[in-house]
Image: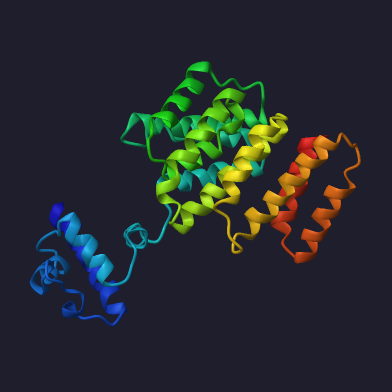
Length: 286
C-alpha cells in the first residue's frame, strides 16, 4: 500500500514538473538531489516532509495547490458536505437534511469531527425548523472545541461561521474575540482571508441583530484592518453594516437611506451582493 501511495504521489509530482517544462536538475537543491527526486517520482522511495516541501517549492507551487492536485482537484470531504448542507438549506429540504444526518454518521476517523459534522447538519435543520432542539451538551461541546483550538484554520472558521445562531450572546462575543486572536497566522493565505472576512461579516450582522452595537463596532474595526481595495464584497457589506448601525442609533423608521445604498450596489451589477444585503435588511427590520 505504501509503495502504491508513493507511486501515486511521485507520478503526480513528475506530471506537474514536466507540465512546467522543468527537468530534475532544475528542481534539485543542495539538500535535495536529482537521484532522490528520481527515486521519488518512480515510486521507489518517499521524500521526508521537509524535502517534499522543497520539491513542491521547486516547481513553484504552494503546498495547498499540491494538496488540491493530490485530492484530484476536488474539495475535501468536509467542504463537500458543507456544499450538500447548503444546497439542502437553500431548497428548504428538511427531510433531505434528516436523511443526510443518518447517512453521514461516522464518516470521519476522529469522533470529534463526526460530532461536529452531525452538529452542522442539526443546526441547519434547526434554522429551518426552530422546534428541532439543539441540546446544551451539544452547544457546550461546540464552544469547548472552538476555544481549545489555539490556531484557527479554515475548518474552524467554517464551523464558527455556520453555528453562530445557536450560541448565546456571551459565547458569541467570547468566541468572536478568540477568533480575532487565533486567526492571525493564516491571514496571508488568500482563501483563508476570504473565509475570515465572511466570518467577520456574519458575526457583525448577528451582533447587530441582537442590538449589541458596541460589540459589533469592535469587530467592524477588526475587519477594517484586513480588508483592501480588492475585497469588494467585504467592503460593500462592511459599509452597509455601518449604515445599519447609524440608522439604529438615529431611532428613525425610515429605511430609504439603506434602500438607496442597495440600489447603488445594484447598479454595479452584482446580484449576489444585492440579494445578501436585501436579505439582511429584511431580517434586521421586519
